[in-house]
Length: 61
Image 1: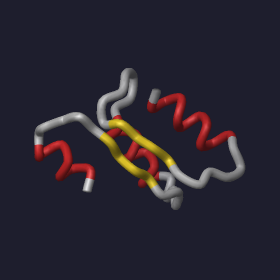
Image 2: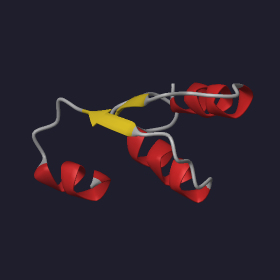
Image 3: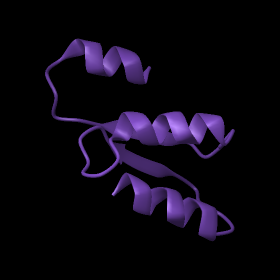
């Protein structure tokens, strides 16, 4: 799903918001966020997760 999200982000002209789960198949939410930073993406992102590992959340911040 992360790969599909990147394809959509690159294909559309405007997005207001990205919702991102940390746990996704093929490309994790963490990897997606890294790609968005590399792209200098300015679209606001809300990251969601059911994880109870604080270290996962710390990396996303």
